[in-house]
Image (cartoon, rainbow, N blue to C red; front, side, top):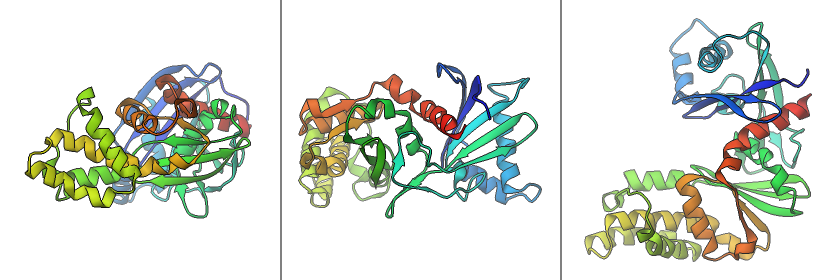
Length: 316
């Protein structure tokens, strides 16, 4: 297999699908397409039919979506795909690669499939420890290694629905922990007794103090004792529902990152949008500025395609 001039980067998660046509050498994004047909939804559609095998059913969807960014395929095309596409619900299940994993990603499990005479797919597995698993985030981490390798050791934070805290040392990813921060926030904000005491609002500096108050309580391991106070604050009109929304966010984020007050390691924050704003605010409230590195949005946006490129290089 030779290095391609271009490749298609495919990030196929539980709820969303995204492909990007990428120049291999410059990593310039030449075209992009995304849908909300994640692996979970497509698997349900697969189960409702009997004409195609699971692998063929997913391959057909992939081919249909490629036409959105590459209508005419004149030369062979390589798709590099990661995420839930390699789970039991996806195109082809792959075993998790066991940590530690080197920064080159050479230990990552890969499977090469030809889905027609011009389109080849390189499927990429997730990673595991004895106590945890991930699919997808490991490629972002590998895409960021040129920045991480400046330190002998540190901790990479990937906030999200299921936040990942990845420990690296001597150019290897050695361990990680998953925090269900985003999912817990969603459940509590929509389905718990305090849901009527919350109102979503765009972030403004007005919420700065109430958010940090929540962070402080979370760091002090007061999450369980503080949740019901959100309803009390609303009933007694101590703070508004919009303020409660960010107080809860602070509580959960503070509970997630609180253990970092005991580390001397450099901490790398890889997030964008509102999550970047909130996690940065939470972390800088108790961590010295020289101990924290916050990646710029362009670096984060390109991390996945950079990771896919490194896997291709390791594979070849």
